[in-house]
Image 1 (cartoon, helix red, strand yellow):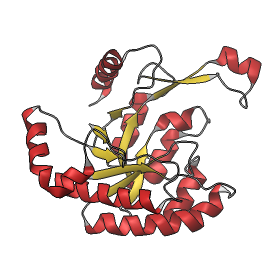
Image 2 (image 1 turned 180 degrees about the vertical axis):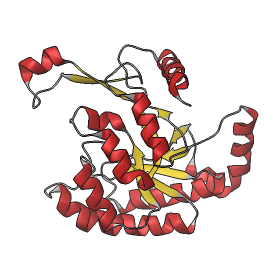
Image 3 (image 1 turned 135 degrees about the vertical axis):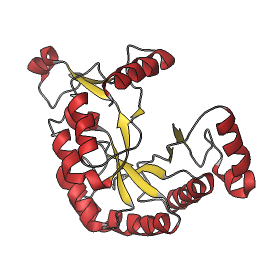
Image 4 (image 1 turned 120 degrees about the vertical axis):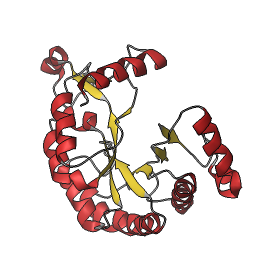
Length: 245
């Protein structure tokens, strides 16, 4: 399970973990048969905010204390600068330091490739990892953000497999009857779905992950408008269990 955290509170209080409550939390998780795959702090302003960078550093510390392997975040963005320039400058400075801290604590950083951040396409992935060669820094890989952009998500897995540290299992449905009317620059012609309800080839995707040596979670991210919270997760779980081998 991916657990969201925030300076303003979350499902786990990072401050309490670092004050010595990690043992109690681990005990509660064990009693309930729950394992944490990652702690996740997502903020578009992380590159601009020293406070948010410090909080993510503490999130990494909490991962280490709780014996969680991965800390998830996003690459953010900087107003008024192009993505490539920002990756080579602001991103490189901030995430080189964070990756060094994570490596020292035995934790990996996984950046979700959310399209509105610096990691929109595969060229952006390449520049990011050239700018921060430390392989502690990698991806929380989400094929749904690539699919509707017509970017090859299978090629992405093969190109950046060593950098995939966590995954989001989310599908995307393209509404061709709307796309033909409004074009790609308008809205409403695609939507996120539970795995198996959209256009992603999940059998090929899981095979690609296996081919590059990925052996960790497929974390269902539920943004499907047609399912309630529990029903959506159960539908996704049934589908993924039917194709995983």
